[in-house]
Image 1 (tube, helix red, strand yellow):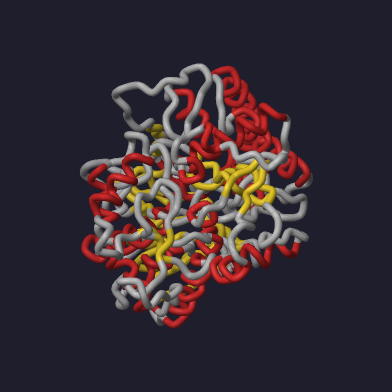
Image 2 (image 1 turned 120 degrees about the horizontal axis):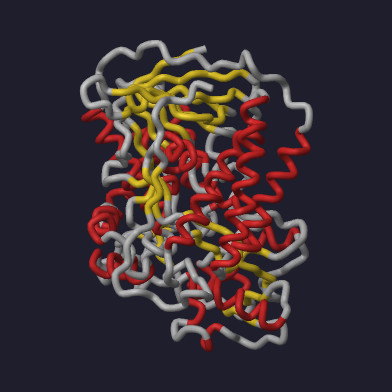
Length: 533
């Protein structure tokens, strides 16, 4: 089955919905969602969006804070491009109907908070559920657009490539997707394809990300021949709720921005011993400090305490966190919160320019899937949603200006004639568990050459098993995600092994120092023909 559009947007988080809404309404757009619309990582963002909205702040200050957090690997041109658009992107959201937390005394009319690594209050938010407020608003707007067809429960399998007759250069013709409702593979053709599938947090055993964060866009772009960079820089959020039944619940950095303190079980504060900025240090420093204290003292977790604030303050600023913690018997108005670091954000990704264009013609990548150079070796808090907005709209403008006008030809047929239904799904489930556990144990917050070598050896064996399974049986969502996970895990290990220094989120005991001439780590896959199975 083949369906044709002008533009495919693969992924329905903030980046994907922003791009879809910003495209010319005359274009036929398919917004492809692995689950239901707006169920990705964006809706779980608590803190807010970083933007210069106060006259006491400045673009230069925001740029400087981003470059410092990026540990010398942020691209200044990309950083300035995105930061300069902050105010316009916030106004665009307000025009779409997003309701941010108001503050009549504030210059811009909205309350601004401060988070780790920022020198000013510049985080605009909707209480402590900004992602939910933004994605719910945009999902309503998307459903109102006659030119956007929403394809829910469609999982991207692989890109469909073509070759320009003269130059031999590859271009993207569309993507194969699995319609999980029917079990059929659907070929989606388009003049431009935008990957906005989010990050790869599920490659680790413990993560704040939803189950959908399996690095799909990164893996399929790499398999098609696009360059991928800086995958060693996986950000571990310092404070994920530690509770056996609290799956993937993040405790926002905004608590530390409002003075919350990290404590040992005996109530001792420890962050001042690790960094002069204490709890307001960038995430990589705070996560390593917690990891150090836990390993040194044999702890399962530490505590984050904001109970010294008034109950009214906590109820007003952090209602969602308060409600969720109360479900587990933790009253943050009266007691500290047990927390542990967890994989949170993929700073590397598919290399793009400032229009979202990848190495492959007619293929774009935006949001957490992409590597623009903004985040460098460590993402500054609340810059991620800003990047989704700025690059989503920049990409839409570029697609509108350059999408070719030729009619879509017939795509290669997906061939299932040589495969059967899988007879042992337990193999897939077992490999899922093994990939995530070995990444947590060997390629986590602190690394060594020996651990990386062990991880690479086992990943290669797993990849051979998964490739054999993929070639023999009909595809399923679990199998496709597992295939992507093992590819992304391998990219993380390869990039980590190539970086023989400690910088930002990548810390290795074998090379604890930072070198003087940093550069991105780039991995490229060579593909000679499109994979029609």
